[in-house]
Length: 318
Image 1 (cartoon, rainbow, N blue to C red):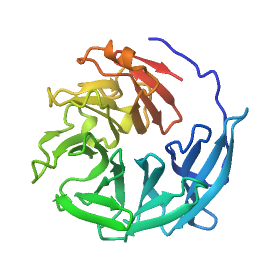
Image 2: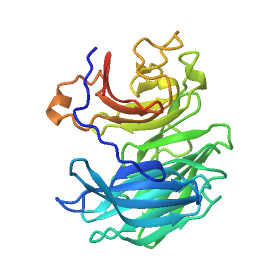
Image 3: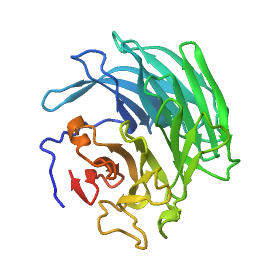
Image 4: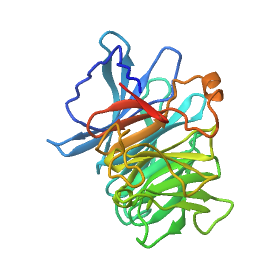
């Protein structure tokens, strides 16, 4: 086990709660923008903000534009519909979905299309994910509904592809290809969906592989384009695990709950893992040197403030 420390760490204090943030796809080689889901507890106001990131020392965030919503944001995603046309998708705890189109010149909000509350889901939209080209997104909720939304400049069209009637709750989603995506939910469960085979998930992983995992929740999913057969998940009790579709009932535990033990000795955190993402800083040549039987290095952030890179069999904490 090895440990590395970040060489530079900067705090950028904000006057409101930050519920989510994403980098906006680059509009030019010289500009960098951050999309922030902001909540003001004093005024009870929710907004989507675009900030310019000045890479000075220390870095500075400067507000460029803001769009106000009527409900707090539950999930935030960005995509690039074309070379110079990014889009932002946000879902709310009231159940509405909003897609915004920033102006590529001054990053003001040019237009917005939305689906109102209680249309897609009976309650909050727990997670949505955009396809890489922004042409469609998938939404899931604790009500057991899975919806596919087509994104156009003039509006949004949707169709419900599954409804468990509340028997299964979904809390995370992630596209794997233009026709396939994964969802996660209660009990550290995962499901794999293929639009070419409608009617329900084509493969499922039930999180009953250890005593503690049965009560856990999957908060985040990632799928690497070069390893589509492996679905990465992060959730309750510091749990980070991979689900290999070639061995669908044998999870690969990277951190947290292990089979037969309430907490694995390799656990990096004991709190909720809010986000997992494959290490994007790893070069393609280094990825090629890692066997397809092993999980690629994973970046995580957890509720107790841990940012780390985890490798199968050890972890690097930052």
